[in-house]
Image 1 (tube, rainbow, N blue to C red):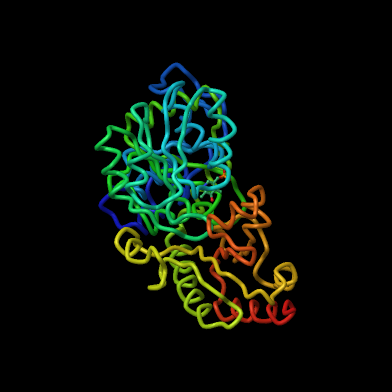
Image 2 (tube, rainbow, N blue to C red):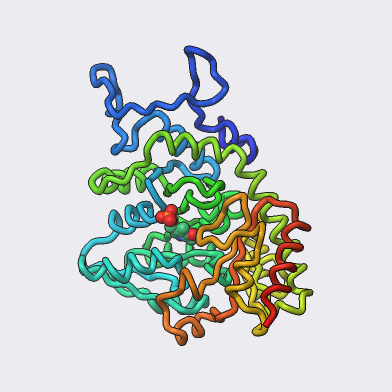
Length: 383
Ligand SMILES: *Cc1c(COP(=O)(O)O)cnc(C)c1O
């Protein structure tokens, strides 16, 4: 399946394994961890990322991100660890966007100093602030857009340009957008990362990560990843392949639902403010319009002070108060109670994360059912 086929076609067909024995319509699963060595061109072994299912799925996702090659790992964090520790050594420095997934922030804060790797968190979304943070020993820039939980947008093309100007590599966490809504390699970004646990998996039933880049870079990352050992089992690789066949349908519907719910929420008295890149009032709307194919399926909103947040969550009947995101079922969470629980009140305020902020991961349900569910829960939670 060639790159010139449409996105939806590549979701369904690219990288699938042919079954020459039974002509089955779907890829067989090869769960073997041992392969004969006599006639092999490549040494096949799960931890080397060379089983038939691993290779096939990496091709599928690479084609969706217009990348030369992909590498599938056992989690999103394994993917981030593999890229950062294969591309940084003692004495190096990394420029990092401050509004990053909590796990990424923890990894950098907790582990880098042990290996004498330096870093600077950039709190502003201003490009000059990124450029100013670059030091003589800086090797890379790490961004995430749209960001969690306020869906702030950073200019991908400009970050790629700055990286090239200073001879750095650029890394983006593209999880929130998914390959359906944003393809950063087209804008000159060097490495794209996804937590496949979210939209690529899409059913809240697996954990996986993926990196996408050039053959040369993936080969370098693979050499490191072999040593630290974070390959994905072939049963899960197969499940992820099956999930991606419906990726464009799922995320298309989720994105559409999110736009409509965001517009609806702006009109509700119990909502103070809505954060969604598809709203013309959103601070990053113009930029999102330029660099995203769709505005994504994540949104946030501040509830009025007279709504009890916990009662609201407990009263929901369809929408689930869950921490993860990207599944076909809608979920809500409170950054204050979950992802940003370790920050002080002041730190949260600094990032614009209010106590009444609700993060909404849009599913594929009927929109009217979701609106009714919100309404009945709000009525019960009024103080
Ligand atoms: C979940 C998530 C990760 C981490 O992925 P895991 O699969 O949980 O390891 C990284 N970045 C973002 C934006 C995420 O949502």
